[in-house]
Structures are given as C-alpha cells and as structure tokens.
View: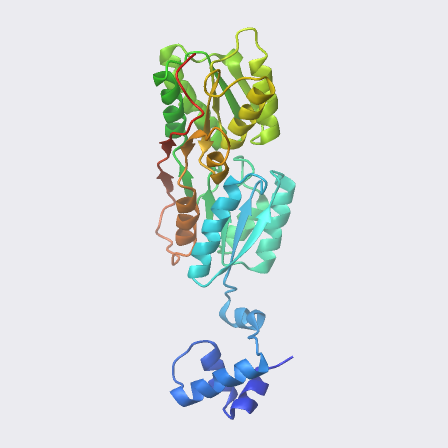
Length: 333
C-alpha cells in the first residue's frame, strides 16, 4: 500500500508538505503542490480517512435511517439527503429498519460506534425514543427527525403538514360531489398516519361524509392497499371514491378496481398522498397530495450540519403540501 512517505519521496518534499497538499491546507507553493499532486496520481495514493478522523474527531459521514426502502417515498428522500451531504463534503450511510424497533436500535448502536457526524432519522414509531438514540445524542451527535414525530426526544423535526394535506385531498373529493368516501390508511402507530386521518375527518365530518364503516387500516404498501380496497368495494353499496393515506395504498386501490372491472375515475375516484414519481407513471395518472420530498431531505442535511449551539431550542419545520391533479378523480357517478 502506498503511504504518505512514499509520496514525499517521489515528489522530493517533506511529509508535512504532502499532508498540507492532500488536506487542502495553505502554506505550500505552487511548484511543490504540483509535484505532490503528480506523485499522488502516479502512485495511486489514497489518504487514510480513518487516521484523519482520529485526529479531527470527524468522520465526514452522515447516517440516514429509514423505515422501509421498498416504499419509493424513502429512496426519493434519501436521494435529496445524499445530494446535499455530498455537496457539503460528506458521505451518506443508509440504514433500512423494515419498521422493526429492534433492528432500528441495532443500527443506532452501530452508528454510535462508527462515530457518524450526524443522524437523519425517520423512526419506525413515535413512542419513547430507544436507549441507543439517547446515548448517541448524549455523546453530542446531531440528530434530525424527518417525516414523523417522536415523543420524549428533543430535536429539530422536518415534516410535511399532514393534516393540511389530508384536508386538501378530502376537500377535492367533496368538490367533485362525492359523499360516500372510503379511507385507506396505516394503523395509527405514527404521527403521519394520525395527522392525515385527522385532516380527512376535519374536512369530511362537517359535510356528513365521514363514515367509520368505510375506514380500513393496514400498512403503507401495495398489497395492503389492494386488499383493503377490494374489501371496501365488495360492500353492497360501494364507495364512489377512496382517500388513501399514501400513494402505494392508492395504487393498490387502482389495482383492486381493475380486478373488479371498475373504471377509474368513471366508476371510482382515487386520491393518494405523497407525490412519489410512481404516482405519475400509473394509468390513470394519480391525483395526489404531493409532499416536497426533495426539500425535506435537503433541509434535514442543512439542519444536521449547523454549528452546535446550546442556546438553540428544538423546533418543528413544517412544509406545505400541494394537491397535484391527475386523472384518477372525477365527478361522482
């Protein structure tokens, strides 16, 4: 393995000069800098990042912990995190918990040992924070929670106004004349699911359009959406529209409608939530409440990389969703 000593010998300069050039520090002349760079190129020298981190107490690695890599929303968010981190000179370490609290705790302990410079966390639940997270934060690692709230943990939170988004979706269906409206959502184990449901209810109830018998709860995935929608659509008096707590549930509802020979939106209207890229690729193109996904990840990186400030109080950064009109929702039949 090529060492910094080998580079110094090849360039005919001191080890200190090589170190300054490799680490981008000032105090080295143009001629020496060029000789060092040429030697680095010829010898294929790679700086020892581990040794450097031991000296500076920084690894230049950010961790991003997500609950479900199979849900396109999270990879789209991670793309924004990776872009923003790389622009700031950081690599991104991705961990997928599969919505499993034990797996999440294992990853948090690993990241604590790896001494990451910051953590962007989408927790798999919003109950009391795990001990591993408290230990990591107590050591001084900056933590930003994204997309979901977490009880009993003081840090900045970045999320979309889910209640507002729920109201936007429900209002759109009411304006199209729908009153028998089914709801597909995740079980209320996250703030995201609860707040979207609260938005649905707040808009539908005054119009007499909220019916608990038309609510189905499951997981945020295609299979759950398809099964729950099929159950709703098997009712003697089926709903004329479906509000879905995320786009995967909505796409599952489109599949269930197709299985039954129902036309969308002529026989059934469907509205999703998230605005993932896939929502624009399905037929018919999905009407959905679009989150500013890229901005969520970008802002999380900006916040986690801020200089530490003991006087700064944690706050919630609430971003606004928007209704994106597609072709999956029409006037009541």
